[in-house]
Length: 85
Image (tube, helix red, strand yellow):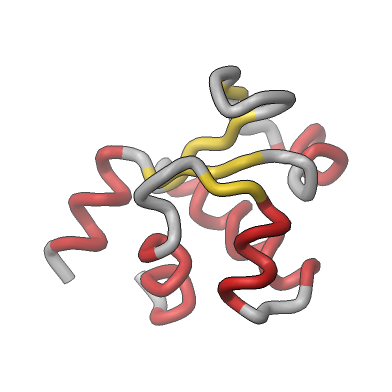
C-alpha cells in the first residue's frame, strides 16, 4: 500500500462523498479518482451511488462516469490493511 493509498483510507472510515475527499486530500480530481479506482480494484474500498445505501460492484467501464458522483467507504480488508501498517 502506498502512502497516498494509506492517507486516502484514513478518510474512509465512514461513507464519504467524492467532493469531500477532494477537499480533505487536496488531490486533483483526476488523481483522486485514479487512486480510488486502484483501491477498488484491490478490494480495499467500496463505492455507493446514487445514495450512501446503494453499493455498486466495481466495473472500470462504469466507474469513469460515476466515480466523481459516488461516495466511498473502506472495506473490511481495507481497514485491516490500514490498521496493520
